[in-house]
Length: 248
Image (cartoon, rainbow, N blue to C red; front, side):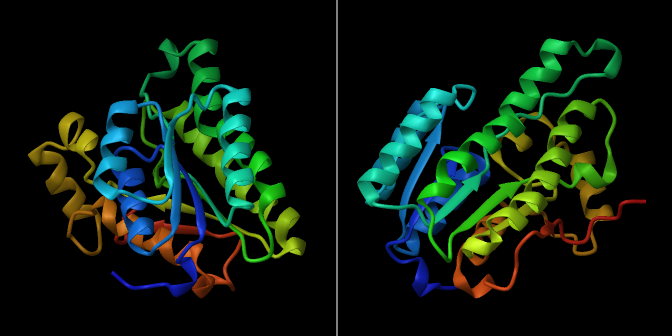
């Protein structure tokens, strides 16, 4: 893994950091010597990861549907650390449902989890960032392929992309960068358990320019780059990390 000296002692906040891509990012930033503070609803997994790392950061169970919990968590970290260098909005849910079965409650729930939470964490973090700060939001390659039964999820991810581009313009004068990562099909424990059959693996290999299956660590390394000053010329961008998926 490449080393980014400017990430040492950098204060990094990661949502959804106890499992999957989030877990890989927590580990990656910890190895860089960053002060990693992450949240998740899975308190057991979060506590286990903290024991594994022995990091100088912290874990907290936070319900991202709650504005007050977000404010208290981020405000507490920022005051204790006297600022925040990096925010990574990783947490999301990807419940699938046909349009005919979708309710207003289902639609609103996805938007609250995936888009509103992203807005709230950015709003609470930005005042604590100085020049060189980096916000990394997560979208999805589904906004390009538009799979069926995922219209609500895809809409939330499209909203995050628009939010990213506008926020980059708004925070740019303060020298704060905002970008988004759109991962391809990542071999997280959840995906392997629920969706990735042998037939799906064959589909993935056919659809990607490079047939190797994507791992959470691949995305974590990209997040390190976007958080580091090495990417100081990049803002307002969507980075597709999909090994060249074919969107025909």
